[in-house]
Length: 447
Image 1 (cartoon, rainbow, N blue to C red):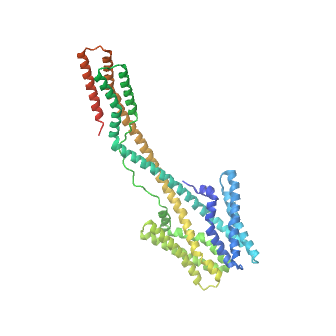
Image 2: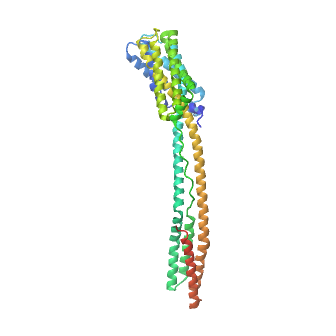
Image 3: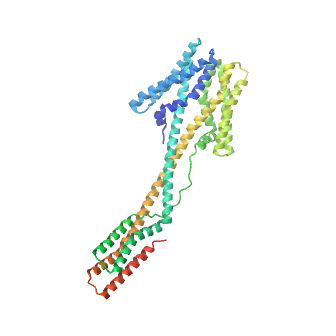
């Protein structure tokens, strides 16, 4: 089970894929912040986006490299240093671009804004990415277990249906040449030491083949596969705990939106933004609770929640635009248009993180069950094969092998030439009877 500490301090604390995943949402937040700044043209915004993505990326690489060379991980103190450094560098980069355009750099606001975002969103995103990697690892491992179970089932079904035929065929293949040699020797009436030695070699070959006979009883087929669905887990978190999910989403989007509102329009703008966030949150809760009551399939519930979340953010933004307060200008309207996307992304990341954790926990349970099943079936199959092989060996090396040994001894006596013709005929008849009895026992093994 992936712990929170390992998720935050492990490989996903800082890597290229993780940093790349922040490019789009981070750039959108930069655009939201820079639109009301008043730059003379859009290239300043492009420059701000580029600098705020590149410089923090270099910082993350340096900090993570130093700590990983010392400890192998990025410890909590390294995480806090890295996250705060990202916030400071983003604030400094944005302020420097504003200063180059002859505008107020707003150093304090920018640094506080990005530090708050880094401390809230970076741990959440890191945790979600780490849980995603753990989810893929568990899926791959369970797929291997499923293949092992399928192989065991196939072996069990095949052995139950064919073991008698395979045993009979194998024994007949091993015994047939020996019987033919004995008959040939009896037919020519020349039973010498070479013939006896050849028969004994056939007997040894028969015993060796018997050790390789594999048998096993049919076992019950695998239980229907139980799946741990990420889609279901994500939807379940929002639909079964709508108030908690809504409050978490609001807590994630409130800091950047309220801070930006204060920067643009002061306290009245903060109040207006709070109304918009509250509206979106309440609507999101209603959508999530309503989806749970619909009792629709998981994928349908997932689609309804995604669309409902985006709509809730859009209605929240519309509520702000329709209010009579006058802090919004054209650029602020453009920034406000990003609110539905930000709200939806926050809700999705939260539900993904929680859903991945719940799904991975369920996968751990299913994997433990599958491992026990594989182990039990492997042991049962091995025990059954050993027991069946022992039974075959007892038959072949006991009764059948004993009869062949007595035939070999009789053949040795015949080869010595100490019998009268009448006695020789009687001994030959006894050998034939023994061979027929052995052949009959072998035939009993055939289907």
